[in-house]
Length: 543
Image (tube, rainbow, N blue to C red; front, side):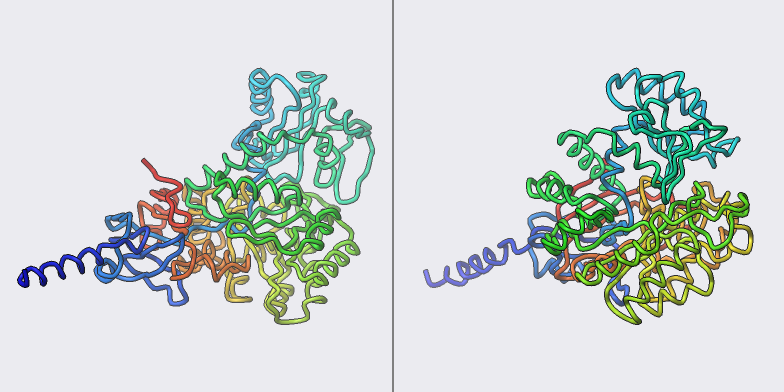
C-alpha cells in the first residue's frame, strides 16, 4: 500500500492541474496588442469577458487551462475595431428602407422608387443614399416626375449625407411647405415661384418631423440588423452621433436581454429635452452603453453646398453656405454643456464653421485640458486655425473615406488653394498626438478596413489616384490602426477598458484573413474578417 501513495499523490496533483482557470485561449496568432509600445504576441487568455494574460502560447498553456482553445493558424488578431463617428440606428433603419446608394441618375432613382412601392404598398416611401455628384448631370433633381408617379403617397428621398433631400408634393403638403418659405440654417428651393422639392439641411426636418414614429419592433429590427453587419466587418464599438434620449432605454433593454451585444457610445442630439434628461440623470454608463455628451451641428455638407465657408464656393459665386444655428445658440449650448461637465462634439465641415466652433471651444476650454471636446469631420480648415486644436486639446474626429469620396469634386467646390488645407489628417494628428477615425456610415461604407485603407493609401477602392490624393496627409499603418482602436476609445473616455489587447480590458477582438500591417497597399481593401469577438464570445464567424 505504501508503494501506491506516490502514484496517488501524482494523480491528485494532475487532477488539480487540469482544473479550468480560463474561458478562452487564442494561440498561434499574430496578436497586435496596440499597447503603448505596439508590442506583438502569439497568444492571449480570456476569463469572465476580459483578457487576463498576453504572451507566448508555450508559457500561457502551462499556466492556464481554457474551456475553449482557438488555433489561429498564423492569422492576425487586433483589438476590436471602433468607429468613432457613425449613425448606427439610422443605418439600421436605412436597411429597411429604399437604398439609393450607387444610383447613377434621377431616372434610375425613379425606377427604384416604383419597384419599391409595389413591394411596400402602405405609408411613406423613404429612401436614402443618392448623390448627384455621381450623375452625368451633376445637379439637384426636380420633383415634377415624382409628383406624377406618386400624386397622393408621400415620398422623401435623402441625399447620401442626410443634409439634403427631395420630397414630392404630397409630402410637402403634409408638412405645410410653401413656395418662397424660408428657414434659418436651411433652404427650401423655389424656382420661378414653384417648389422643386429640394430641401437642404434644416429644411429637411420640416418634412421628417411629419413621418410617423416607427413601431417598437421596427426599431429593434433596425438595431439588430445594423449589429449583424457591423460584426461582419469587425466592429465591436460604434459611436452613434445624435440620438434622442428616448433611445437610451431602448438600447439598454436590448443589451440587458442579450440581443444587442454591440457596444455603443451615444451622443444625444442638440435638443432641449435631451439636455434636460442628461443634466438631470447624469452620465449613463454600463459595459455596453456610454452616454456622456451631445452632438451639435455647426453647418451642413460640402456636397450639398451647405458647408459654411469663409469665402464663396468656387462653383457657385456669392454663396458661402450657412451655419445651421446662429452663433449665439452655439455659444450658449457650449457654455451649458461645460457647466454640467459633459462632452461636446460638433459637426463642422467648412472653414468658417470650424473657425466659429474652434473659437467658441477655446473661449471655454482656455488652453490644455482633458475635456476631450471634439470637432466632428474638421474637413475644411483655414491654415491659421489648425493650431487651435492643439492649443486647447480639441479632438479632431475625422473620416478618411470622406477624403477619397470627395476628391473627385471637392476641388470644384473649394478651388485649388483652399483644397490644400482640407482633409489634412497628418497635420491634425500632430496637434494632440492622436486622432480618432470613423466612417460616418451610412454616408460611407461601414467597413473599418476601408477606413484604414483610405487613411494609409488615400485612394478609392479602384486604386485611384496613382500615388494617392494629397499623400502628404496619409497616415502610417500604426497610426491608422490606433485610429480605429485605442485612439477611438480615448475619444470616448474608454481607453482604460478597450482599444488594446491588454490584461484587464474587455476581450473584444477581431481576426483577419490577411495582416493589414504587412499586406501590400493594393490588397488592403480586400482583407476580410474571419472572426469577431465581444467579451471573449464569438459574435461573427465567416463560414
